[in-house]
Amino acid sequence: MMVLDSPYDCDDAEALERMLALSAYWDRKYGVRMNWEGSTATLDGRTKGVKYKGIVKVGAGRVYAEIDAGFLAEKLGGRKYVEKKVRQYLDPQKTVAELRSSE
Image: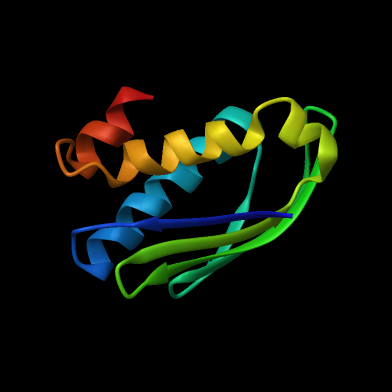
């Protein structure tokens, strides 16, 4: 089980918008679909031979995720990749529009 807890400095609405942009990127690039209801997303599927299932919550200054992606995902650097992308999308140096157009 991968547990991620990433703080952010913007307001919750902007953080949610940034995570929606990230989930749209992952959908386009890998076919990873996140089903959002308010500020909570569920995900369940398979990408590149790795099965995953989890939940992501945005609020109170944090993006919190619990994702079961199996041992193979950890060995292939899944945690580092996800942490890097979340940090990138929460970085206040880039606007949401810049993030959406860059990938």
